[in-house]
Image (tube, rainbow, N blue to C red):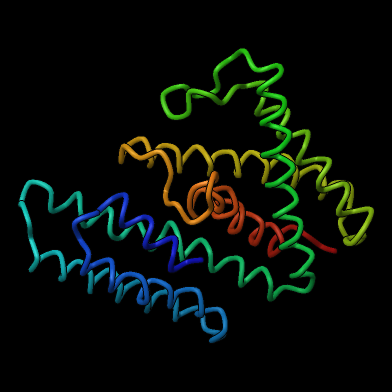
Length: 232
């Protein structure tokens, strides 16, 4: 998923940089495996080496000097946006209730998306952020948060009884809003790159980034909530 996501990002942001994309896919995806090493310093090492490597690569493969800084920034953003955020799913899986937390994230995101869509279609009148996503509405956003709450309560009363009512409500609201922000951020990128979808992998739904945008933002927030607040 990380490799495909990086590929989609490069195709949108830097379509002419095929050599750089070919290198970025395997090198960037190595970030995903860092949690298995058990060393926090490895994150610093890999990110540092990626930064230096791709900075030098763009330094000596300049196309036009006017766009050089822009291209370097986009190339490095790909690593932070996709594999770095995604590695938090691995970290989350390694916590005590890792499997349950992964299902909670998916439940929050899916119930949020579904409830926001149907609420927005039927009751949406006030545009949420028309500059970035003209179709999303405030009513749909609120409906999505209600859907997220249903998702966390479903988790609490089925497969995750260790989740307190406080956790269920807080996670529904926080992760629900962060997930919506992740969706808006990807919409911002796509509109900036003048593309409709990040890819064509999933017919009718777009690419991996179109499906993972909310989860990418939700993963680190959930992980640090579990690490510093959740008590089980």
